[in-house]
Image (cartoon, rainbow, N blue to C red; front, side, top):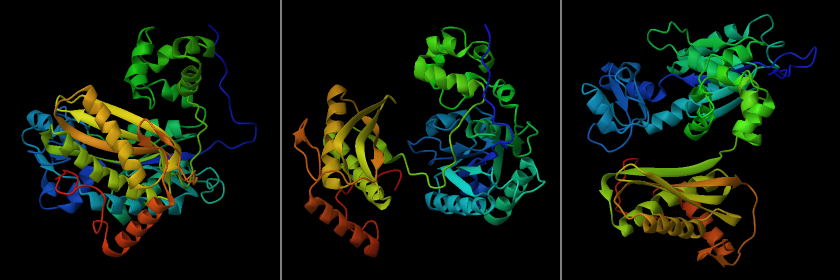
Length: 421
């Protein structure tokens, strides 16, 4: 079957130059900086909580990963795989500080820097290459950035680069100096080599191709990018559907037109907690959820956003993770309006399956800066809007917290101990 041609930049248009900076085992580095005499001396290091905690692995040193330990794994299981490992909590305050420091250095090198997570940031260097970095290659610039970040922040980073964000994301995985790889911390894909580079990956390694999508593609024998490449766009759409098929065709050919935005608004805001002991009582779970909701709503207002979708997550004692969501007609920003929605969602989850829970969380999404209406009628027993009085109360709470600290006043329940405190 004939292969469709891949779009190229117009004649005379310089190719884009995009880098992704990724802090190597970021939380492991932070733990060692926070405790140089303890975690700093432990080659076998697990970050996420103590060995007795019920949390999950946030990160692990490369030496521990050789035992099969992975991020997201229960710490208890990780310790069974690597009994000699030292387990430490996440140094959360240092995380925010070092993330800001790294981005500050990156911003000196690129006109556009977009934080993708606390340990990742994209850099758009297209306009700077022919002007600021005349005569220098993207690889040379990346090495200079890597040295500057290390010297000024004490954080090691790897950089992947190419003509778009997808290529940079994949390239940074090849750049990381994992033991035995010989990688130097920088990997650049030259313009025109995008498709051949992507062809070296398994579909499971491509961002956006999750387990269910992988299963659908595997039914027709597509497990490697090379399995998809011989097929034209129509054939791919027949297997994956129109929308996902168009996206997949672009991806396997190394095409990605997404921009690097200097000020990327958060897509969601949320908090979760893993209990030290499984909770079964509805009232205890409700109180824990309200504490988390208060924190999330406070972060929401501090970001200048409003939310239309509230999602409650519940992980049962048998590790089954369940979610319930509600989208309201108008964007909300107050605890009084959002908390009843969260409580109702928790009630639905508990009604569907009443077993002990090990984790509860809340996420606010579909964020916007629009004001919305003040008040709408009730639906499903939940208020669909918020009143001017509720907003005045929220403003007063924000003012007190700004003067007296975040814990000075709150709507959530007290007396519930959380691992993420």
